[in-house]
Image 1 (cartoon, rainbow, N blue to C red):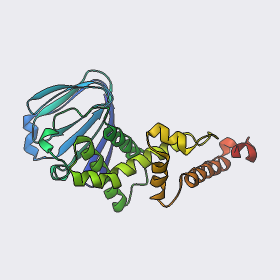
Image 2: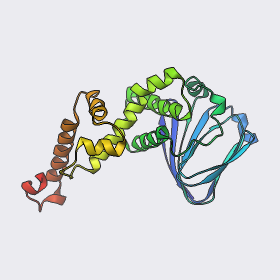
Image 3: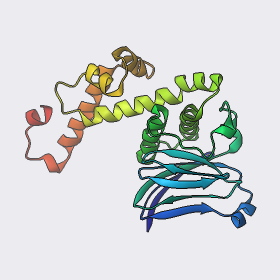
Image 4: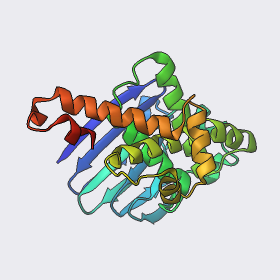
Length: 245
């Protein structure tokens, strides 16, 4: 049994699914459809992959990139949460030092770029504001940046990712963290930096790129939350001072 969420962006078809034990395969008869894209797949459970003459295990939270031009399969023997997306072969190849060495090999869960990519994909699943063509194109570029860094980007692609995909993914992760700690009166940029293994100065720079500061962002988010509480009948029993605190 599988439940899936699909989001189509220009050049990127992303799928988030939860499934009972499952085997996902692309057989030889299916190759006649002419699809030559590359598919990224991440899972929170251990699995086993057969592709391009290789057989290998995938650990929990590992990822793999597969070629739609070749038969292959990934098997999960327990319930699993999957994230996958397809990307044109030409787009990814142009960003990688050695594309052939990246396919059908585990991308380890310990990879910091992979962790950022997974967080960014989760944000895309929940984000309702990625609606304009400009924002959609930027989101796709960020995803490709992060995947290229995780697989081994060229020097130029890595430099581009530092100023685009990596920065965007880190900022999204930081903003999500802030949202979870808005009620913490002692919350500080130092705490945030420590959790994300960044320097306080770098965190401040991330907000500066957006024309704001850490302090301003936190204040605006707290004000927005207070407004939502004051406008909701669920909190009619609370005084304004209680909401403010």
